[in-house]
Image (tube, rainbow, N blue to C red; front, side, top):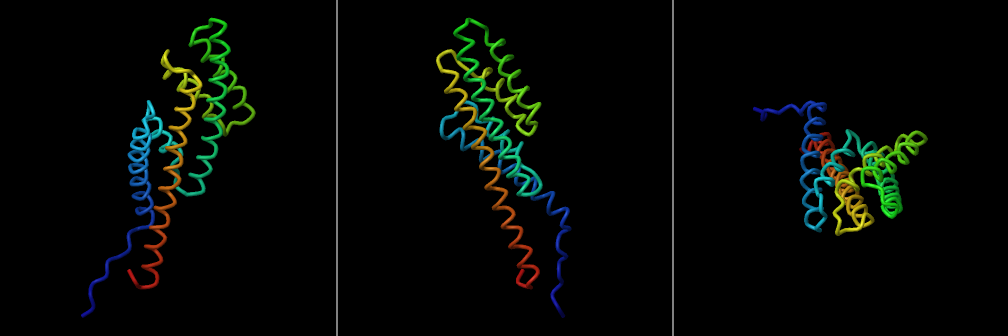
Length: 174
């Protein structure tokens, strides 16, 4: 009598489960990585990893690229406008409004870089008086990049594991 065979899981179900597991792993790894290197707001790394996590690897990598470019734009605009407008004695709220306005103008032309708009408040609202806005911008940008890179790497690894599992099942070795 032949051993009973177990049906392969529904591929849609497997895809849903893979996404759920990837997101959980990305959030934890991103948070731990940013925390371990001493960044002040490691939650931004976890959030960034989740924002770029998509269903397909190419979608995740596309979201990573757009988020990274948008973040760099937002950090540069926040740091430059914050530095210049602080010298003029303007409040942080005005500095942030000007930075967001500049980024919003950029987004009207390049909508895929809209991360720049929320990067500005992330920089301004996490700035301490003892730390330069440029340093804070660098730290927030590093958190975003850490989360995004971890999301991309985890997605690649997960897809490789799923592909190997499918190939193993197809050739009768699983």
